Length: 78
Image (cartoon, rainbow, N blue to C red; front, top):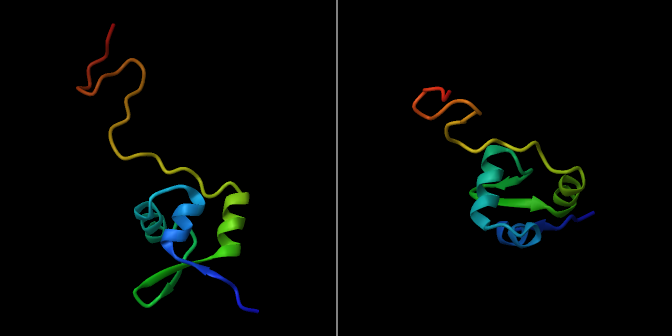
């Protein structure tokens, strides 16, 4: 059985995200990928399954976290 492999551009169109996000998600393991030398490809069935499962857990954005009652400078407001 021959399974269709998608390019990062095709996955980006399928997910409605930039191909740079696809490359980054594949690099970090967030998006399941197949490495073929220097090329990255994606199994169509695996991407569809990944979507149906709700993908992977959300990774928090980099940067400081500000909680209620505190400011970036470390001072609490009264």
